[in-house]
Length: 140
Image (cartoon, rainbow, N blue to C red; front, top):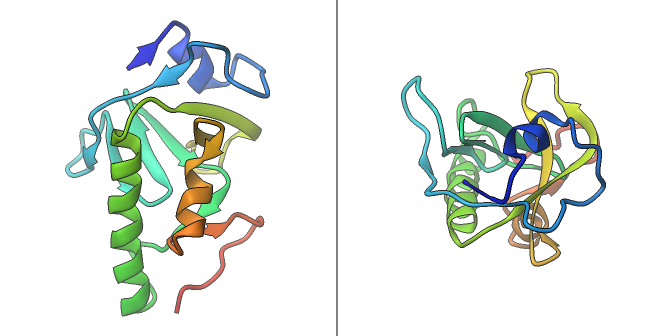
């Protein structure tokens, strides 16, 4: 849910800003995604749906949960997924466009921020994500 106006414009990337405007905060009750209908839920540690729009956190990469390469990656992937869900449910956050609007899968690329801090950066600090360097690093 948007506290202000312009959710569609912001998520669709038609507002070309380096930082969100005052009042552009998002919140929702995030569960874990399941089934084919996804509105507001967490897919994994770096991907979530917000009001029907799929968002990829642009500044990190987390372990895979759908096709992990080893048991360690599977465990870390589940932890990262749950931690992202907790963080998104902890209160309003901003979504900042940083570079490209979308990835090759059509996901909106955004940095999730709260109080000037990247939620992705927090996952990195907790050992549940790698900073995105333009390629995937292994977890095994």
